[in-house]
Structure formats: structure tokens, C-alpha cells
Length: 385
Ligand SMILES: C[S@@+](CC[C@H](N)C(=O)[O-])C[C@H]1O[C@@H](n2cnc3c(N)ncnc32)[C@H](O)[C@@H]1O
Image 1 (cartoon, rainbow, N blue to C red):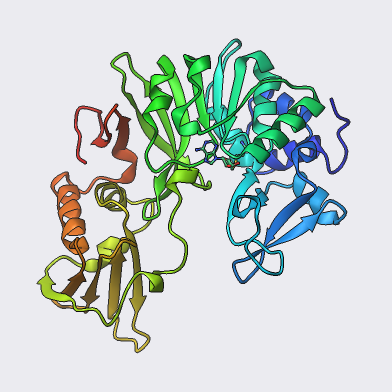
Image 2 (spheres, rainbow, N blue to C red; image 1 turned 120 degrees about the vertical axis):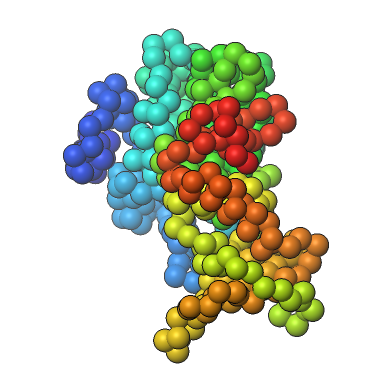
């Protein structure tokens, strides 16, 4: 379909293999056959040091070089209407995902000849093209919520010779018309896995989706759909993606959500507050992040060498808490404000993790039911949150 050049698809595959990665030969063939640059819009966006995004046009040599580098490329900002008076954008709202991530997710999907796949988040259409190349476009359905992007993605796919079923709509509802699918691949992150994805996948089928929340971070979830209408599985790695449009995070900084002059309720705690900012991939963070909704946490360490620090928690909806860590202390000063006592919620979740024997993150799995998401330890019957 395209002639591999030094900065073309074959070179990109070479880059992916550079770290000794062994690539499924059929996905390798698809990556070589589908030219990534043909899916990029004339203007892509680069992250500036000040947090804004600047346009980079096709005529800029970086445009082509990024197409065949292992980097994600922002293809839309602020839902298509850049917020900056200078034409710059504030929030990346669509992208061509990082090729290594695309490959990792496609491999995790464990497709086979004849498998019918639903992709959530068409964007440029590149991923749908890879699926079409491997499985045949008649087996691929892809849905995009943004009408302009959906049209661009459809046009890109057609230009390169693929005609999967392209749908404009809210992917959290799936695409019932094409169900049941053997595989659902989300290329946009979910804080709550929409049950429609489970409902529209046949028993034994797989769902691969970036998942998490602002406290937990982004994880790649791989769920197997059961005959009982639930889907269970494990986190299989990291996966930084933009959130589903209706599950986006708040805009702004923590200062927008904490009023330092507001009255606080004072108390003490015996739990070391630093546990709330434990390593992102730790077991305790997984349990806390799952059990305590809408949590944000950060820690400030004193610069005087005392080892003291303050952990701040907030939910961006009017509740926050602060706990002071002092080395050697048995009790720590805690204060909180708002309808929720966030520290009490965190402490409760930490207690559940401790009662379970302080397990590592790798031992936790996730089940999606018609009404909730559950976290379990070692096996789906052992629900802990
Ligand atoms: C990272 S991009 C997907 C990359 C794409 N698969 C590709 O190959 O270029 C995520 C896309 O998901 C879309 N999106 C966000 N929320 C959505 C929703 N509820 N339903 C469908 N698409 C959604 C965004 O508009 C964005 O275009």
C-alpha cells in the first residue's frame, strides 16, 4: 500500500523493535502496510513548556518526522476551537496514539481471523486502518463522538482504501447495531467502564481499555466477558490516554479547589499520611484510588531539612483535607473541610488494604457488572472494594 522509506512505516516498525521487542508478525505486516502520515491532519499540535499547545503545519519537517517516530501526536485541541487568543490550545482533545501503545493494545486484544471488533475513539482512523488491514474492514466498527473528527477519520480511511463501519456518536453506549462483538478496543480512557461494552461483547470475548482515574493514573485493563453478563480481568500495564469526553477531569490547578482561609475541622490520626501518596503502581494506591471517588492527592516537603511534610487531599467539589507528617511522631495533626472527610475515607481504604495483608497491585483484578465496578484480590469472588 505504501513504499517504505527511511522515515516511513518500515522505519517505524524498526524503531518499535529497537528495544528487542518481538512483534506479532501479522501486526508487523499491518504496521508496514498502513502509512501513519496519511492519517494526520495538516495541523498537529506540540506541547509548549507553559502548558499550552502550538500548531505545527505539514510544511514543518517535524510533522513528517513525528509521523514515523514512536510518539503520540495531538491532532485536536479544545474540541476543535483553540482557546488561546494567540491561536494556541489549552487541552489536547484528540490524538494519534503512540505507536508502541497502539501495538501493545492490539496485541493484548488477541484477535484472530474473522474476529469482529468495535473500536471506541476513531480519531484519525489509524487504529481502525490497522484492524481493517489485519481482519478485513467488514469486521471493524469504529465510533467517534466528535463529528468533525469522525468525518476526517472516515475520509482518511477511505483515501487509504479501507471502509470499516464508521459511526458518529457516544462510544460509552457502544454500537448496538453491530453487536455482539468478539473484541472491544477503547482508545480513550474510562474512569468507569461503560456497561454497554460488556453487554455488546459475546461471552468469552475481550475488552481492552485504558482505565483509571486522576489519583490512580492510567492503566491498561484487559477484561474477559463471562456468560453471567459481567467482565473480569487484570491491569496489564500503563496506558496514558485522554479520558472519555463525559469523564474528563476538572480544569485548573489544586489552588482552584482549596480555600486556605476556610474553617477546618481539626483532629489527629495515627496513620502515616504519606501512604496517600504512595507509588502510583502500589497496591495501597490501587485500593485507595478505587475506593475513594474523585480523589486528588499531593505532598509538600519542608525545605528546612526537618523531614516534615504535609499531604493534601481534595475532590475538586468542595472537600479537602491536610495531614502533617512529623518524623518520629505517633500522631499526626489532621484537618478537613467540606461535606466529605477525605482523610477518613482514605484511612478506611488503607485499613482494608492492611487487613488484606498489604498485597501488591499485581494481585488485584477488576470486575464490571451492570451496576458497578468491583476490585478483587486474587480471584473475582474475593471482592475488596
Ligand atoms: C486518543 S484518540 C483515539 C486515537 C485513534 N484510535 C487513532 O487511531 O487515531 C481518542 C478519541 O476518543 C474520542 N472520544 C472521547 N470520548 C468519546 C466517546 N464518548 N465516544 C467516542 N469517542 C470518544 C476523542 O474525541 C478522540 O478523538
